[in-house]
Length: 242
Image 1 (cartoon, rainbow, N blue to C red):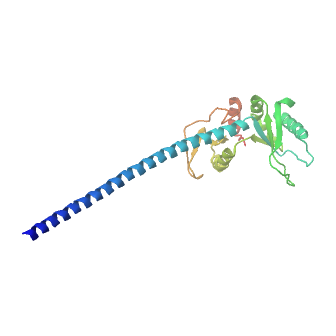
Image 2 (cartoon, rainbow, N blue to C red):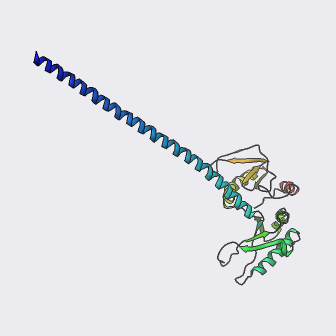
Image 3 (cartoon, rainbow, N blue to C red):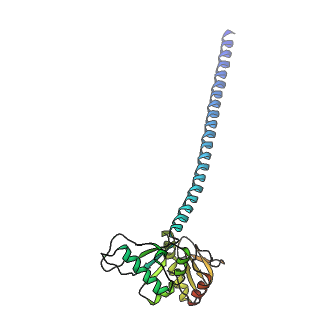
């Protein structure tokens, strides 16, 4: 009888140990669940921070682009201006003033040009570095820009002072412009955009994939600094701003 009672007590003790063991395991599971919740919360917080940083980075990129565009807003680039090793800044300013005035028929005073500078660090034999001309007045710069087509009959050339990003986009779109013109369409580059028969080209990541949008060329100074009347005249003659 005592043996049976002892065995019964042992059985109850084993069962109790088993229950305690299972409860311990449950505690471990609860701890793991709580830990996973904490980790998930941290992941969610990090994801929110990353999203916030991406928005800030995008805004910063836009601000940088706007700042770069703003600093170039008063500028034009003049090409093929003769250069010599002894050239002084005053000589260069006088030279470009004469070239621009004679070619575009826009009368320029010495005060109309803030500064002139060659683009590039070193003079290479047989080449001439372009000249960046910064105008004091945006109106005066736009008057000159609206007469860029007059340079076609000279050895000189002129363009707006685009940012690096805009230049890359224009380089990518130029083959499409030539292709459209060969097919008889009217195609022009306006800033970083290509317009074919008045519709803006929407490009994909690859320059071979594109479609036409219904948007017409913007009249804002940022995308096209030339007066509307001159743009219409340029459209008829299929003149392209460089």
